Structure formats: C-alpha cells, structure tokens
Length: 196
Image (cartoon, rainbow, N blue to C red):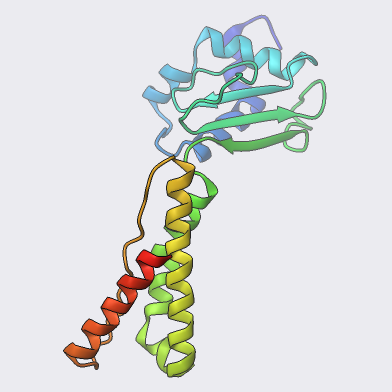
C-alpha cells in the first residue's frame, strides 16, 4: 500500500470487499450515502491491516458499515458479513481464492425454510393442475404431510426465539366441494394443526 490513504479506495481488493458488502447488505446501494459510511479513516486502517497483516485473520462488516477487526464475544442481532482470510497477505491475484465469506446473524435457516415453504412450495402443492395429475389419494397425502411439515417448522421457529408460535391452518381451497364437506375439511385441518 502506498502512504496516500486516498489510494486505498482505488485498490481492486477494496472493490472486492465493497462488492461482497453490497451483495450481502442489499439495502446499501452504491452512492454518496454508502461512501460516507464506508470511506472513513477507521475503515481505511482496518482494511490496510487486513490486507497486509498476518495476525488479523477476520473482519466483521455489519449493516452500519462500522467494520470490526476481530470477532466479538457476542454476535450482534443484525445481519453481518464475515470475511476471513487463509493467507497472511492478500494480493490482487489471491484475494478471491484466499478469502472465505459468510453471512451471519439476521434470519436463521429455519426462518428461511418457513418463508420459502409458504411462498414457493405451498403454491406449487396447492395448484389444482398438479393435484389433477397426481390423483386424489396422492394429492391428499402430499397435502397432509406438507401441513404437518409447515406446522412443525412454525413451532420450531417459535422455539428458537423463545416464543409460543401456533401454526395457522393451511386451508385447501377446493372450489368443487360442497360447503358442508369444505367446513368439515377445514375443521379437520384446524384440529390437526392444534394437535401438531
């Protein structure tokens, strides 16, 4: 690195770190606000040390862009980007292969699973065209298993947050059934949800 602190912002290694930050923290779009938060003297010193000092192996970048030069004893509740290096010195040639990048904090993997299940799997499994192709018995079995899975994942997400979360029943909107059959079906689903 040169002695001119302004030259670090033109360094391809810094551009790599910026790309990683912006892909993790999508709310932080490039521009004047990002530059104001990121291009500080403290950030410059930490990045120079991270690139050249063999003793600093990891940096943590939270959403507020106040880079921490070591892993804290307790992780913040907000989403953070952790960049670790496997070599003592990071060069332009080895920065992509000598770094390990991980996103920590934020939503848990179970919360992501619950979100994907509700927004992706449920519409596919509820599609009437798919149900016609599967047949009545197979369709019913898939629906029952998926409702049980969704109930369990909702309860598990509640346990992880030390909350009591009861699953909401996932009603099967079958337009061809009568009102009486539909209401008994809904009652059955509600009972199954509570018992899960």
